Image (cartoon, rainbow, N blue to C red; front, side):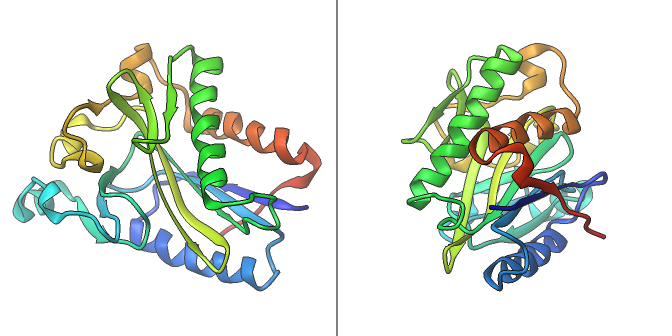
Amino acid sequence: MTLYWHLFDEPVEYGEALRLQERLRDEVLGGELGDGIVLFLQHRPVYTLGFRGDERHILLPPEERERRGIAVYRTRRGGDVTYHGPGQLVIYPIIDLRRARFASIREFVVFWGTGLARTLSDRYGIPARWDETKTGVWVGRNKIAAVGVHVKKGVAAHGFALNIDPDPAHFAGIVPCGITDGGVTSIKRELGRCPRHEELARDLLSLLAERYGTDNLKEYPLS
């Protein structure tokens, strides 16, 4: 069992990240990258739609999106519309589910969702919970982490976005994940402070270490 990880220092443009995920997924399928790799990064501002996402949930007019520098992408992941940008930790586990000992896509998603909730609760004292019905991590009626995955030939891509301190005005330009009976929150909003992205990534790597063992996790250089 070998699982790689990489933490990006600078925000990554969404289209570039899509191409990278496809390349890495091909490498996992070809047996060139162990059992998979987990990417930790931030994106430049972007609205993304799942393959069944409703474009009417993007409220911000195109000219205003252009003025603010917010791109739009439709993807193959599940879920509706969401926002990615600075102040988030985005986690892309590009993992062979079978080799990583996940019995199903559901088990994979629940592992990460409950792990994110446990990290926020145990490490930062935020009363977060994983809600399988609403598919996300919630604090009260507000979502703090969004989920959207896509599986091809047994290898997952896309993943999870945890709000540390994103610009709330950018969320106001959409109906996030199609939610009409709740809102969006962040670690900064809940705590009044926020950890560094590197700190959160290390916290989440500890979840993988619990499951697979520290010796089986290896940092992977990406140019």
